[in-house]
Image (cartoon, rainbow, N blue to C red; front, top):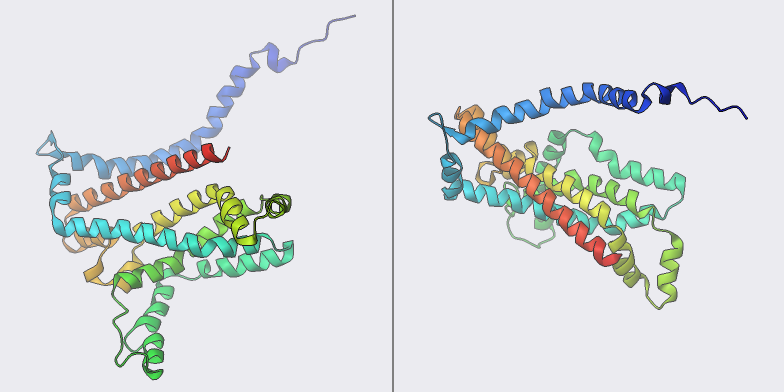
Length: 291
C-alpha cells in the first residue's frame, strides 16, 4: 500500500509557521495596548518614585501621612465596597427572577434593566439632585406627610453618593449575575427542594454559591467604577465629600499640581489591583469548598 503524503503544512515546518502567524495577528493589539495603555500609565507612575533625581517613596509617605488625604482615600474605599455590597444584595433576587423567565420575556427584562446605561451620567446625577435636594421630590413628600418638620439634608452627603453610585452600576451587576444564573439548571433546584429545602434555603445555599463567579466579576466592575467615578460624586457629594477621582481633578486642573495628581492616580491603580486580587482569592477558596 503506497504511503500517504504528509500535508505540506507539516512537511515544511507548519507548527513554527503557525506560531509566527499567531504572533503577527497579536502584534496590532499588543502595539495598541503598549502605546495607549502601558506607556501612559508608566509616564504617570514612574515620576512619582523620583525626588530630585533619586528613587524615593517620600511622595507616597506624605500622601498617606496626611489625615485629609487619608480620609478621602478611606471614603473612596468605603463608597466602592458599600456600593458593590448593596448592588449585590439588590441584584441577586432580581437577576435570579430574570434568569428563570422564557426567552422573549427575559430579553425585555434585560433591556429594561440596562436602559439607564443609555442615559448620560450627568443627566442621571441631575435627576437625583431634583429628588434629594432641599426642595426636591423626596423632601417635599416627607414634609407634606408630616414625617419631618423641615427638609432633611440629603444632598451633598456620602449617602447621596452611594445612592447615585448604586443606581449607576446596579445594571452591571445584574448583567453579570444573569449570565451565570442561566447556567443553573432547574433540575438542580428541584433536587435541593426534594431533599427538604424550601425556596429561600435553596436560593441561599444553592443559587448564591453557584453564582459566585458572576458576583466576583460584578463586584470588581462595580467597585472599580464607583471608586473611579467623577461626575456622580462631584454633583451629589460636593467638595466636602470628595473622592480620589475628584481630588485628582482638583490637584491637576485647579492647583496645577500634576505630581500629586499622579501619586493619587497611582494609589488608585494599586488599590484596584489589590481588590481584584483579594476577590480572586476569595473566589478560589469558595470554589475549593464547593467542589
